Length: 131
Image (cartoon, rainbow, N blue to C red; front, side, top):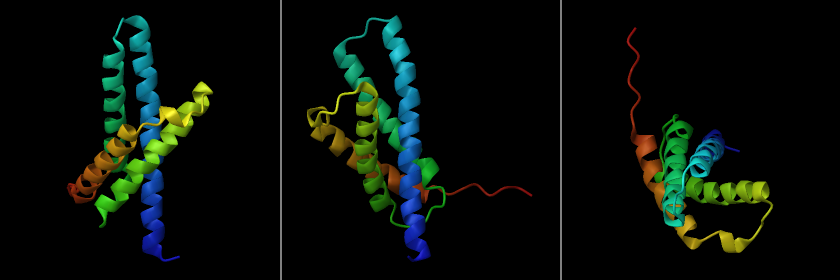
């Protein structure tokens, strides 16, 4: 396999792993908040979407540090794989594997946020270190 293709795939895998780990931490913190307070279902739903968006954003920023090109495609693929992977991880934790729990809104959100964040992440220039 060509070195560029391997780098491309590794960037995507790294992004998805980072995003899922961030989601797990944020969901755990939010679960503690929900346990201590009385939040509505709608509020919980909005926060869950926010957690997904933040996770993909941070995942792409850390995962695409190497820069390069094709940020939109890497981001799109990463966003979609994040949705699938996080669904599988959280479904296995809850013990409930139902495709009805995977909504098209989650898939669309993952794709759009991944695409946008991928473009941003590969175009953010690192600040040069002062010697």
